[in-house]
Image 1 (cartoon, helix red, strand yellow):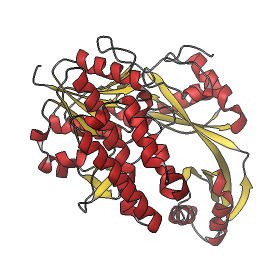
Image 2: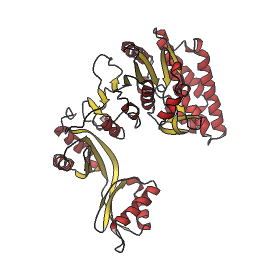
Image 3: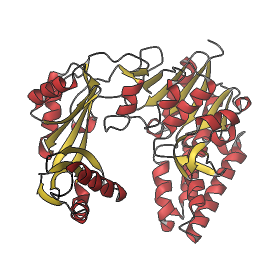
Image 4: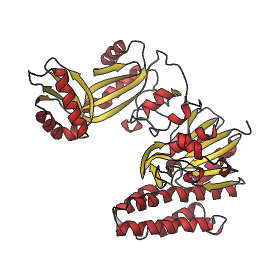
Length: 439
């Protein structure tokens, strides 16, 4: 166990003030074996950098402000071992800002600018850990060989290419690795989407063959329903990899969509914990392998602002071919279709409401016609496992009054009037075993 790695990921939501660094150091010290950290930018930093990308006037004092902000976390950083690196990162921020001011379309300078948040955070965290007696050092994800699938912006880490370039020797002591970034497939710096540091952490765990990944959050685990609905639920104690991948696309989750993938092949467990909770108790949510039992609902999410559109096809053309044509044209326009049901002479589509007018034009251009548009609605997706999904859909319909749209072994989707979403979610809470009750 002494040689096995634990990869800790600390996001900006738990890096809000200097006391958080003490808690971070405690969590790392409590963890057995070797530890590697992946860090996001300090709280609020990325938002300020994103604003500066498109607002040069706002950028005028940004370098000085962020210098002072990071020194509030680590007052002796500028005069310590990493002082020169700290100043170089700040200087690179200034250069990127000037390049962006001169050419607002310069994507390379945009990427360089946004990456400085993680670079500064890694230096701050490593400095604090050294003050706590740990042999910590900051390292860029691109410097250890992490390669992303894309240029400039990417959806995921290229694990195969990263494996071939991985420099394990760079990870001595307690490495503090920059999240969110890596080398693009063109060799230049590239970024993952917001929240991508979770995926950086699991990719690093895959490369290290780590024994576990801990995602430290400001919540105790993954809740089955987004807390923004004001409905009280307990964290989900265990999620299989497959359910976690599905949940990552839902609004009830705290995971980046690509997070789970790198851990599946090696069977590496992912723990979601709250920073205030030490490592000796069970995690709020544990993600790992498992067999899907007939356990009923696990989580639910809501896609707001959808509309049903009923269309009629020309009589001389087969309905299937006409529906396929409409769906193809909508996809070409980037208009989301959440579900479709074939009728004998047409179809019903569930579309994103903000693009309803565009979708109507597309339907008419295809030769079909719109005969009815439903009221403002929402689509509730219920994750779970059922041996008989159709029966489960009927049970959920009876319990909630919502209309089932489709049913699969691991997912049932329900259509509800937009104004009834909270009520329907509350009924789910009242009838499901994975929740604690209504606030």
